[in-house]
Image (tube, rainbow, N blue to C red; front, side, top):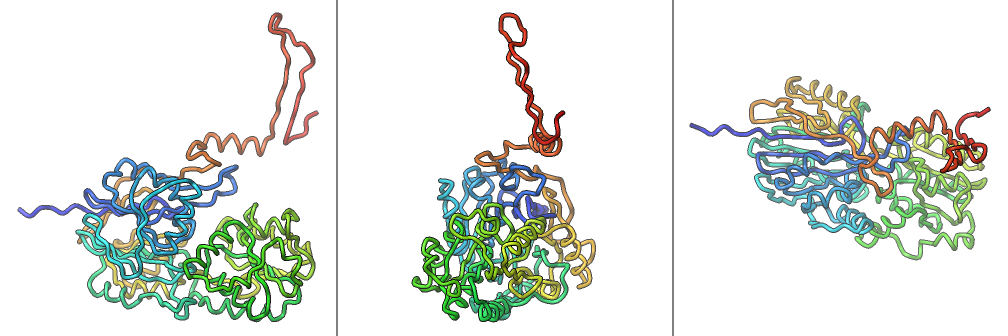
Length: 492
């Protein structure tokens, strides 16, 4: 009798119903590969929490099966959890040159070591029963990959974060041809980025941002301050190019900005002459009309360069009248209020603020509806699994797939920890595995739980009352009147 094949298991441990902590497990019998290991920035009600990372209990229990951690690209929501989990799994990591350099910098910071292996678009690697091919995709960081995974039951395609940019900054267009070839061979399941699934049309090219910078730099008469993600190397290059055109020196502000710019320059991803840079200690020597400050803080992060400048707390730079501040990013869901607060502070200081709502100073790194349709049309998957996004994004993406002819029974909107089992003929939702978020608070990993958060919320909402009483050990009587201290409410 013919042996019954096992089912392939696809298990999302993060990145579903949220934008962050991306991690997807692909498992077949005795082999597991893991795609990405990211973090999530905490919600407003997670008081005192620095980051949230995926719960890797399932992987730790099955670590003898885990063959590799393969990384799509170097953004924090895809690599940020690695220093916290890699010791527990002790597996090699695979990624492109820039991705590995960013991971290595994080590992050094946390004094963690592991095996790092460079792959590029077109690389093919064998991990147990899996064959993995890296595919070039366009995103807002260099070295972004999707993966075509050959399994015993069929071919799985994971797009990673992507958009289709026909005029990318690096001149390397997403490998649509290879995706079409894979589609003709037969794709069993497609896992595709859903972040912009609600947005019609196409995502604009990065080149539009460069043109916008040029037009505004031409008009600026004072200092220009640009806030963006430090990891958006393409944006850093565009800003530097515009600064050079208009005879401005560039000052980098923020630890992550300095670190990533240095890494990218050493690897050849940033082409900026050293004499274009000026240190923050020397900016007072540069006339305002010849200075550009490139900083972190585009998400309103409390300790970032831009926020400290806006609040008047930066030791070297203060916002002043005549400054042009360009916020070159889209707020991550949940950060909108923080960004709005920063913009208000900047206006109070007399700055002119430009963000994506007023000008094309930022374009998304994620595909809109027409691009998502193209990927589905090229790969022609039997099963479709939307990933990377909040639930409304996943549902919108599923609706797109249905319109393109994929039967509703073959579309699976995943849940974190819920196993999707697939074989050549059918797929089902299986059991659940341990999953959720592990909270990082300072040096503590997972020691802050729901009970601690609940106590913090009570303290933040209802205040605190402390009674200090000095009692005689011999008599048990009060030695003096008690001292009562209250915080957070009026005590009478």
